[in-house]
Length: 248
Length: 323
Ligand SMILES: Cc1cc2nc3c(=O)[nH]c(=O)nc-3n(C[C@H](O)[C@H](O)[C@H](O)COP(=O)(O)OP(=O)(O)OC[C@H]3O[C@@H](n4cnc5c(N)ncnc54)[C@H](O)[C@@H]3O)c2cc1C
Ligand SMILES: Nc1ncnc2c1ncn2[C@@H]1O[C@H](COP(=O)(O)O)[C@@H](O)[C@H]1O
Image (cartoon, rainbow over the protein chains, first blue to last red):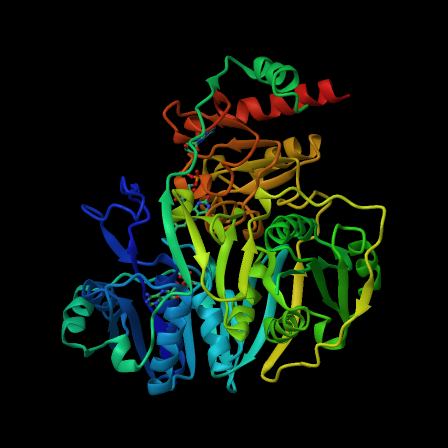
């Protein structure tokens, strides 16, 4: 089974994000980057599918040359090889999906595992767009994946509870938080990853126009909430809720 | 081409209230494009919901009763929605940014060759339509424009009031998308968490607990407080990950977004990813034993106290006031 997993390089979610004074983007100096959290779950799932069914795990990232670091991390976890589609442009999810459509055309994987959302741009679109472009079924927000007889049975986290769906492969799965516990890269894993193949392509070479359909015009900080008061005790809280906030 | 299509969402034969917030967004958008708001309802036995939608502030209700839509599947819904969008010449297609909306709308966008905005919190006309949306866990708000003729939008429903019922009923018309059921996909089950409590995203009061509660059993006191106020129960990711609370309760960047009148954050530190899901609440009460906890930076009322002592006391005293 050939499994493709996607890896996006994103700002470290633990860092405070600052906006440039001219509102054209966020400050990138001094910012640390890492693999998108949901993609860690996706890569882990891809590797465990391989461990169960055999085959190969290919990881793909679209982004600046520095994204090789996240691809090496994925290979240190156990992915077999990597493809970087190099660009310094910020892409919308649609451009990501169109680039991936071409990569999938070349690689012909049986299953694709992606993250449910990038934790920087918070869009939650790329996998569903890709599935539609490929004409493949999708199982988003997966917390459980079971593959047999060419179908994937996927437990999904949805509003109001959980849901189970079966999709025929090839298909696309997106990882939610409780899908698995991503493994740490071992030292031998890290050493081995250095020698694993990493191919670099460009959107041009793939023949994809990456012009965005959604243009970002302005970046702003949200309105800050003001800190309120620390109260003495429960009696004061009840009093304030009743007589000041008028919510009781 | 100026109409706005809203896709209705329903569970168990009941229209979800988030649809009404999406209708409000659609009305604001249609006022800018000069078009009508039409709503599409897909299901297998949805006549009652169609009836209800006809007085929800829309110009027309299109509905399709078909076994293919008995259970939600993105593969069946997306082509039908795209067909309806083409039928009514929609400039904007929207639905709530629920798990269903997030799942199906990008497929609709792909079919319509449309750009998509996730989690829109506003729409305005400033030399063309502009949308605002939060990202980076709510640390950043961007203003975006969609360059394609058709625009697909998932609506952050906490930023739009539910549309009120009208006395006049809009026409209700059957619509046959002619797209059928997709191959290679099967609905197996929907395991609903049955609860007497209101839905998290609709509740006027939300009582949320964090990892500081230490166990699932200790969530009992959170539930008691919620029940005394007829509220919903929420949790942090850390509490969910620790198995104290079901996933469906998670509030934050990667969970649900809520904006009730009153939010209790109990034994919750106030990580930015949690705040992303609740800082739009009208009144925030924080109970934490650590006076330095960041949650106090966003709360209106804080109690520096042990939750195990004050939550039962609070429940009891609120109950007295309510009685
Ligand atoms: C990509 C990403 C996405 C994330 N998405 C989300 C999300 O959607 N939602 C979310 O919530 N988190 C999310 N997180 C996790 C988030 O960063 C925090 O780890 C999490 O919110 C912390 O939960 P907590 O406040 O319950 O736990 P902690 O941070 O451990 O805080 C527990 C608090 O309880 C207090 N406490 C302990 N005992 C008591 C007591 N007896 N009485 C009173 N107070 C007490 C402590 O002082 C402490 O402040 C995400 C993280 C990442 C990296
Ligand atoms: N630039 C990228 N390179 C590789 N994968 C990506 C990229 N952008 C998005 N993805 C994948 O698509 C998922 C959803 O992204 P998004 O639509 O941006 O929320 C992410 O979790 C990644 O798995």
